[in-house]
Amino acid sequence: MKTESEIAQEEQAKANEEEAKTNEQKDAAETLAEECRVALEKAEPALRQAEEAVQCLKKNHITEMKAFTTPPGGVVTTCRVVLALLKENIKASDPDDKIWGKAKNIMNQPEKFLERVMKFDGTDIDQGILDQVNKIIDDPAKKYTEKDMSGQSFAASKLCAWSVNIVTFNRIYKEVRPLQLAKEKANEDLDIAMKDLAKVKEEVRKLNEMVDGLKEQLDEALEQKRIVEEDAERCRNKLESAEKLVKGLAGENKRWSENVVFLKANIRSVIGDVLLAS
Image (cartoon, rainbow, N blue to C red):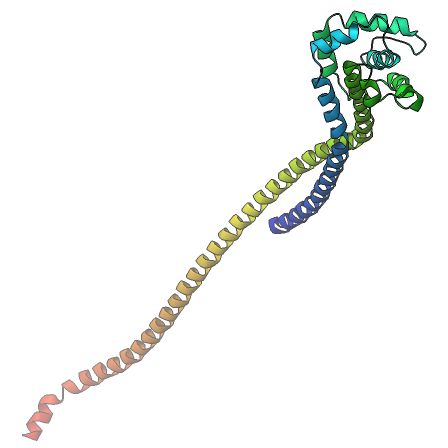
């Protein structure tokens, strides 16, 4: 049967093993976090540039672009990309006049339009929409760049810059997302492992506390035993001395008894001896 000390040692060994595993999980989680940080750093410039582009736009810029009776081709192309990103349900086959009509209708409320663009969630773009806009963004013939659009409309150039950068951000974000999910899962597992390790350590602490208490009791018992044994030894020594004394007194008692007998026998002749002596 195992003693409490042996059980405590076994539990301590388990705790050490769990701690080693937890440290490995911690290292893995930290590695994933660093990978995510580095990857997201690549996406941040695109998001920042998209935000900066749209922050340059004011109500009057949208009003000026909307005022085109016959908009330049680049303006319509920009509207086609922006409307697609805003999920305005347009098709790649829709003619330019339909696209322009829908764009003008949305730009009738320039503040609301700009707010939608500013609050756009670049992390959540449907793949179908990305496929649609990338056919324009990636086509050199379309000349879909801020510089090429700037000669046609300031608002179109900034909306072009916004759309290109927000799509770039989305692409990088989706590349990073699996890492983020893995990092979140690693952190969740690490949190569970840390809690389990804390429980094991607490059990070990209680066992060690109990073992220390038992050791203290044992030490007290051993000390008490030592005191009792020393008392017993002193008693044995006293007993032996008493026995020697008794034996010695017994010998003297015999001698004294013999002397009494002798004196009694001779007391009768004491007077005669005295007379003779005189």
